[in-house]
Image (cartoon, rainbow, N blue to C red):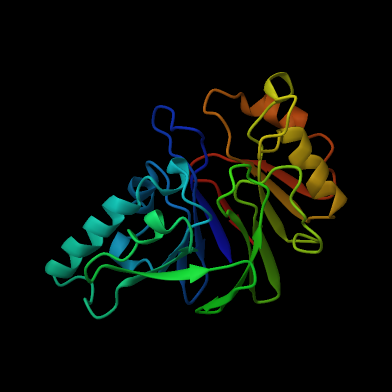
Length: 249
């Protein structure tokens, strides 16, 4: 598997940036995990959007889904231009609730909706994907994803607070993509469904993850400071997310 960061910022994109979106590629399949603001523009730098095979959404907060509507429009136009088969709408895998959001995912012949739950297992091409509900604070489901392919394990933690029951879900993952929403100086006293950079590093170290990618960062953070606050992680290579960063598993 190859991971490319298309967007990582939150709650909104800084100049030239994008909110969460991660391209996953194998020899057989191209998946997009989340589709935030600015992600579609970045995706187009790698290949035409009509060549995408599937989209998986962790949850429906705006910073993770802002470009879904324009993706639907784009695919519709590519079908009109005979560049994408109208008999093969893009599958979108996402939580079944809130229904008001899920109902917007099917769009003409461009996209189809496939609901996922915590017990779901989905196979897309040569990738098997499992889901874990995270602690994200507001009652609506948010799912982390465990992707397995060719003996490698990638875990995308999505948005996940300290009360997430990880169990063995991230144990010894070859790459753990984990949010680091806060730095030490702005970490709320009461947990609110997000982790700090320091907490992300401690979590990855505790579960012996072989590599860590810290993401979901405010665009004004200094990358060197993020790296300093991730000092607890020593089990493998630590990456600080940036647009265009690629990692091979």
